[in-house]
Image 1 (cartoon, rainbow, N blue to C red):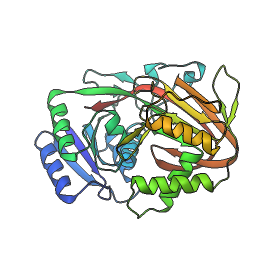
Image 2 (cartoon, rainbow, N blue to C red):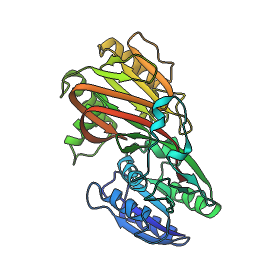
Image 3 (tube, helix red, strand yellow):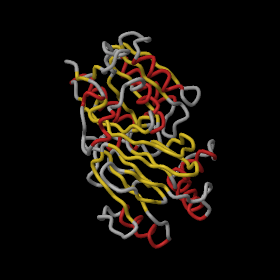
Length: 339
């Protein structure tokens, strides 16, 4: 098998020695090409080239870095893959045809004229960031050495899993996306790029963004097919649970959400301190979220969020920009992951 190892040398938990061990171990089982990213978007470019066959017959692309690196690799692999518009018509998984058809080796054969004969390479993940939400949600070890052994075993035995993904206006996400407060936090941390990310940095930024919202707190209209639109102030969309981690502690918003279901929606109509503290406590203790200001749904195929004013928009903890409207779709069994 030909494989590409995409490494983010700036990721929190990566080191030159660790990268060399990973590359050497992988090279013992596959024909390996190693690429170290040099700028934002580089990992996406490499993964896109691998998926298009520009790097040879690549069957595996391994992301070694944080969730941002994984997201870029996923977006590169899925570039040009169609999203089924029929998802707007109901809830739940939807049609696998929107993502592709499984081939004999477990990879996906994408549907569409441009990519009908091309298989999507399998994804491998070796955590190297601070949160590593996607890897942890898959049950992969947080330690890069242990994760490397797990990946080698998966390559040798063919252990793999098909996972659903979320798509937000053409941007794929693996675990979460959002507009409002959480995206303001991501924007605040992004503005401090160069500082070492940590739970304390996110916590400080979250408090600051709550007390002084950088874009104000405009109404976010949430539309679900078959329901009346609801005005909210912050919106979280999950592709799995936990939604994220605060250090070692998982943050649970939609506990029924997983890579095998549709999307989870968690939104608050009001952002009063009592409301926020109540749901934060429930999120950290995996309690069932209750409250008059809560809008929560599970297993959604489609949800649309709009605002009269541009608000921050994030996917997988990466700031995308500002938007006045975002359509979220669930794409089941979209990608094969080595586990």
